[in-house]
Length: 183
Length: 187
Figure 1 (cartoon, rainbow over the protein chains, first blue to last red):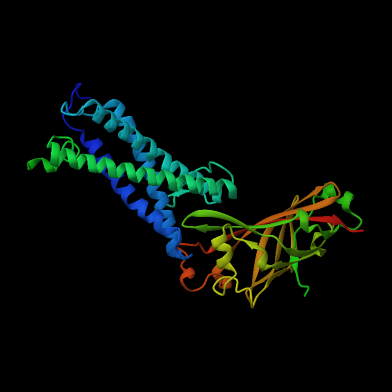
Figure 2 (spheres, each protein chain N blue to C red):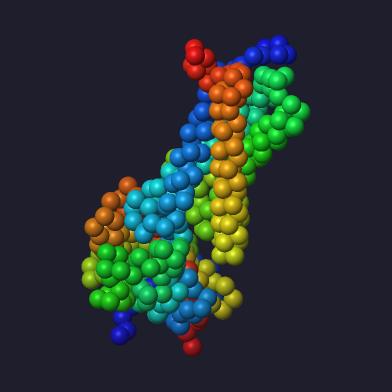
């Protein structure tokens, strides 16, 4: 464990951040696209891949949170005003919340539809609720709305990081993306 | 068209006196279920058939003399989702237009000891006939006889799922069938 004021994220936090980002950026458009597909073996495969990605995000986010409690992230730069800091912290906690809520609502949706989630086709997760059409509709809506909320905050988060890098020219982006530092 | 049904079997010697006279005849369809589980991408998906006709003639005192038939209305399938229900009635799956029913007729009932029996007979689905063997457990529930059994059927043996659906890495070949048949005593 490092001392109180690290200047960048740990390697583990960086790897988890980008893995989760990649999974979200793939699972979201796939999720939008797959629901309108005509039933085919490919549709069944894509649904499974989407669910595997979601469960993986859930697991990685939990790991990330555990890691975070043991490794303090670097502080935001002092150049940021209190409102900016508040917005940044708020967005980060909203991201954590949604990165848990979106896969959980998907898992609930799948259970309510009568389709257990089987992670990578191997590990069957317990059904959270019994098969129920009304509940399935509810969790479908919830999953979709939460996913949109997540992707909007991801977009704001990315835009803010880019602004830090290009406009404020501080270390906020490079501490999560060290190879950019050379510029 | 009356053809078939399902069945099963039998009884423990201790139960024999109860049922001795005539055994079990009329199948109580509303108390009976015919369910199946398919595997899609490793995901077990439950389904069932809502409508079937079944006849049973079973006396626990002489199980070998028993018989059973089942006739299944394929249109009454619930394959687990609307998507699936729309799909399975089509030509690649059940081909309902040409094959609206499936049938089973017992050819032999063998006691396996205790209240267990082996039911054997040809099953016809989508124009293909294959012999199936199912272990069956019999128990008496009040006046009725209850027959529970399960067996695995390979869908491709019956061309259930043709074309792109013949790929078993998505939908597994093995379909688990479970039946629960309740029959009233013969009058």
